[in-house]
Image 1 (tube, rainbow, N blue to C red):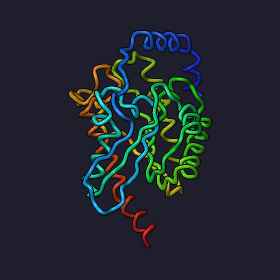
Image 2 (cartoon, one colour):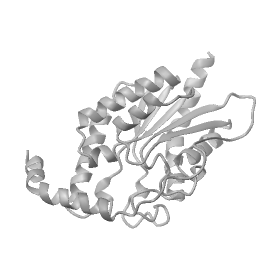
Image 3 (cartoon, one colour):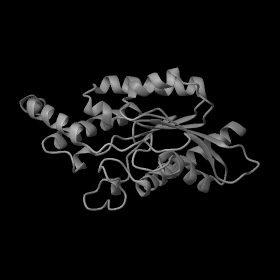
Image 4 (cartoon, helix red, strand yellow):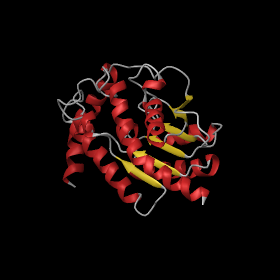
Length: 252
């Protein structure tokens, strides 16, 4: 109740600050290059198929090419850990909410995929989308990926700790951080008992004050190539044993 009362009292200031940030923010392009590719050795083993879904971070804003962005870096990290080829594909767009990504996937021709990674939530928070609508969109997105692409496991990246985004002014930064934490908490609860879906927080060093030199892009919001590499390694560490498990299950 106190939080909502504070939001109502601060609403005019929060709206003004949000508009000012959007007007003044440095706008970087999405990573260039093909949105599909392959990493890793040529082996007799069947390639792993990876799909990246989401917003500007999934689209690689802050990196020069998709090879340097989340998709390419994650494919490289998984190929090293699994010693097998990884085919990757990106379905992402700057500004997308979870509902936007769902609509884009509904209209896309989806190739078969084993794994999917989602990076969604920032635009739902900034757009004041209700957490129930966000969770419902993620559920429908998950179901679509399984039905149309055959995805075996979906890993959802947590909403970043927006209270540590130094370019956001206070109290907007406080409010956005509070909402990001609430979204993550609800998603964590929502995924309990769903073994084919997971949630992973971004590595601390990406947004730790004073600890992200060289990891973030010049806009201060998105990772740079080194930051995407750190993020990809954390994802690969979580995903690699899951891949081994469901691969063994399929061959049994």
